[in-house]
Length: 458
Image 1 (cartoon, one colour):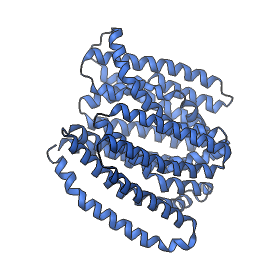
Image 2 (cartoon, rainbow, N blue to C red):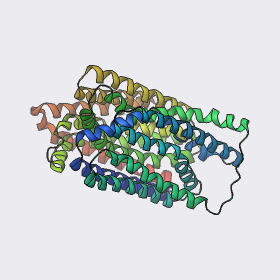
Image 3 (cartoon, one colour):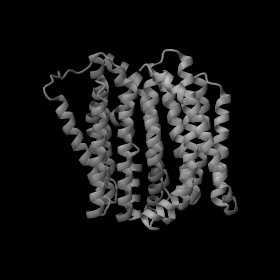
Image 4 (cartoon, helix red, strand yellow):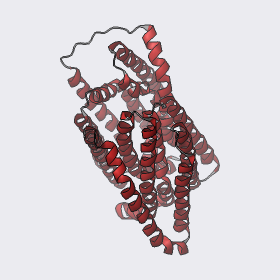
């Protein structure tokens, strides 16, 4: 049962991190103006040019290596990427007219330069299977980040709190890394050029995935901020982050459960079956949650912030309707990576992220902010269908299964959109709710035994 125990620890840590993140957003929503959120989002977008280079995106590859010389080469590559991108980020910060953006971006540059500490901590905890310590580290880092943001929002109430929060976490990671290396002997030897070339030939694929990941998370703010004011960007950022708390919680927790099981299986057919059943189960859970989130998140915003963020109503609803899509995409990526298709996985993620940025950039220039969010929601569904098809083909899963899930998701999303925007349709809400609950109960009951059978021997 070790895999289940480890996964449970990581899920608990993810839950704690997201709860703290939600709490900090609640407090900041009270004390900070939309423009301050926009300044932070603009800084994130600016950092997106270089943040994908942090640690050369090498953690996945590092964990696969067992030879010390090879591991040393990976750390050298990571430090080189961190040094170059950190210095470049400082130069980028110096070109900014806004002192707040320049300060936050400079703090991101320090995070970039010291990123090797984070890489070392995560690699060591995973290598030793110290998942309890790993979970505690993630929770404490989040506690410091969220606590700093909460106190800063109350007593400082400006955009500088975001940079200060990043520096606090960096200091914490430096202390943890120093404690971990205390008493160990390390020889400062430059790896052979042949070893560096070999490692780089593998890491380059992970860098592509890193670009795609940063484009999806931070590149969106860069694209929207290109044509929108800081106030409008702040409204968009607030909506995006609020809905993202729920989607990232479920997606990250599910991914951390899926990966160990699939990677430990020897038969390709068994892997494909497990990935398919996992995605089908998550689909039956995520689509109803997405629809209910869209219906009730506006009431939540009004109750918690007393109408301060009323202009985010349509944006939060649209993002809520579609937040199941990136969760399922992440599960598809994890299934491919665990099955050995990690190069294809990173290429898909690159294309996924860049296409999102280009679509959002075009929409932000020619459309209103609310229409931009509608474009994001529609694009999410198309990306979900396309990535699912490509992933299922690689995993030798029938496309018919993807068609069934996609039809269920799209029809439910369209119906939810109609219910939200046409008052006379809302009478059908309770009928839809009962139907979706029945689907969820059936799927859970049907696949629960399958999950238990796969993991009972772990």
